[in-house]
Length: 113
Length: 113
Image 1: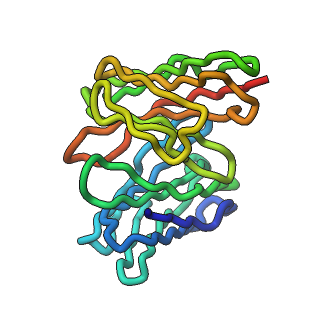
Image 2 (image 1 turned 120 degrees about the horizontal axis):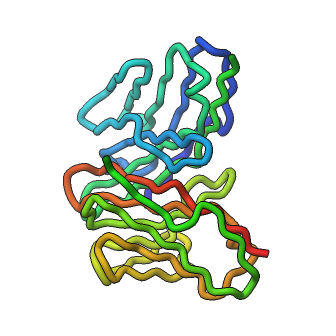
Image 3 (image 1 turned 180 degrees about the vertical axis):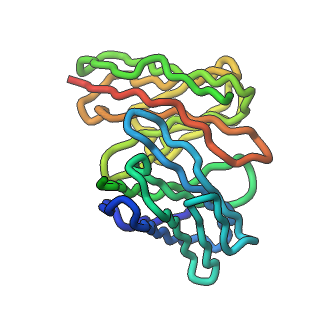
């Protein structure tokens, strides 16, 4: 089955810096790659996603890039703010049947004011 | 607004007790999921359901069972709670086709003494 590795497990940055979280996946058939943000005391919430026919997607300060050949995708957050502090999960899924993603282990992002 | 609710935010139970965790979604989604979240291990799938009265084992079903009698409700049952089931439990739902986003509840933090 699919295996998703996520790095780093913890990331500490100063407010205004950029943050990058990287994930690799094993199944070349995977074609959907969402990123979820989990704030303290809440469930994960989708913040951005990318499909395998697209190399990059941007939404204001966040962007995701996908390299299908290398089987890795990354989350980029620019001009970080304290409210970006959260746990971020990447995921990958293979098409067909009901959607069941394989999640990475999560990255705890801390943005220091 | 999309809503997944879980019956309890915090729960304390004794070893050997039968525990019910309830999840309700108001989006008419076909798919529902139960995950367990532990530090450093990410989100691990316990059970999922494609439709009413249907259930499928996930990656870590041992010690758990589920029930889906109505489309909007998915229950996780710990037949005889053990201390190693102390964890955060997250419920999620998604539509059968189209939007592959998973919508999560706020989670139930279970402590088994």
